[in-house]
Length: 80
Image (cartoon, rainbow, N blue to C red; front, side, top):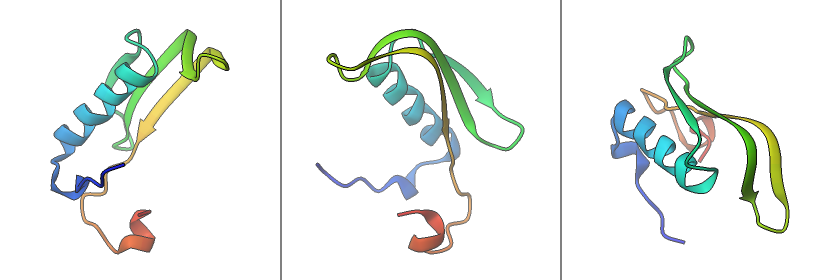
């Protein structure tokens, strides 16, 4: 798997990346929302999806949230 420099993305581009991944991996039926009160990027899905695998599908409610740190600290603080 290739490494990607996500630090070069703007907050909006990061949000769009997470939305695109959710739509591709979870389902095209993912409902995408704008910025939350805490700055999180949120989306939800309710139903049957092949995620995490076709042999073990999920049927239920999923909340997708990703965090984007405006001012990176260090790799331990930033989670990478």
